[in-house]
Length: 177
Image (cartoon, one colour):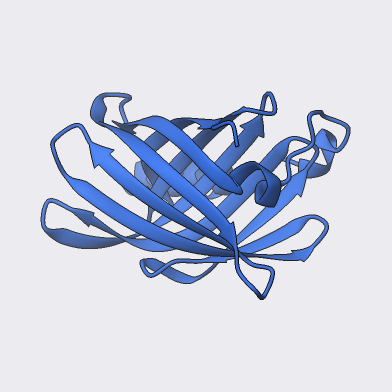
């Protein structure tokens, strides 16, 4: 039994070290500029699946993005969940260099960090997530892919203690300005 546990821990630790090289996407087009894409209005439609791939929830999100006087992008998100719940989140994004974006939101612990190359963004953060009346500290590993000037795909893995517990898939559409 101890050997099985040690093997499981080794597999989990090795798989946690696997990291994609974002620079491989440098030449991909169209180029993703989060500030340009999310300025104005956009909508998203998404699903949440548990670690076995079972659909848990669906949602729609309306997003409004505005530049503040400090040059930060303020994203206001309004979620409508399939079970009737409504929730909101406000992100404040800061471009720190040509490839790095930082972000803060009330339920995000510390700061989110994103790296952008070509049409791809990898966005990582820890947050307090409400689940069945309890608050869980979880980690998000988001991968966003700009497939056209209007469409952005997002696939996020949610983990706790380094173990994947859920996936979120979202399709965003930028509305005409």
